[in-house]
Amino acid sequence: MKTTQPIRKKEEVRKIKEYYQKIKPNTRNYLLVTIALNTALRISDILSLRWKDVYDMQTNQYRSHIDLREQKTGKYTRVKINTEVLFALKTCEKVIEEQYGEMLEETFLFRHTNKNSAISRVQAHRIVKRAGLYSNIPYEISCHSLRKTFGYMAWKQGVSPALLVDIYNHSSYEVTKRYLGIEQEERDEVFECVLL
Image 1 (spheres, rainbow, N blue to C red):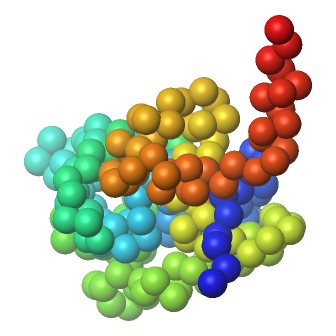
Image 2 (image 1 turned 30 degrees about the horizontal axis):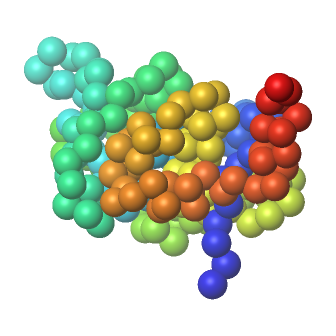
């Protein structure tokens, strides 16, 4: 079985988002890749999100965190809504209000056209794959690649692997290490930088 890889270059990540933001504008798809890149959530959990999970209808404000129980593990997780996700949510909100008149608490973030159900995992995979083709990434990417990209980029910025184990809700460091997709190139960088 072929293992998916994280996206390793920031320019490629930028192009993934740019595809649905500027090249083939689609706010729902832009929101999907933005959330997948910025939250480290599995696609099954992302597709289950409803507007009430990100927006408090009583106070008319976006929530500061996404709180959910992971479908795969049953573990509780809390994810900060960062500025990238918030921008994408606000962009999507404007389009929804134009199309449907209002946001409803129970409406899925990634609503299937003409239905109040979420798009399928297969459709989400197609969305990510199209953006990957545009980005000229030399290997195939999937929704899981975006989850892994979060950890890889965090690790490259100096985030402790122990903290990433906690963020991913993994059972061990070994699982997270595989997620990071550390290759010989990264190992070589350490030998180049540590001069004693």
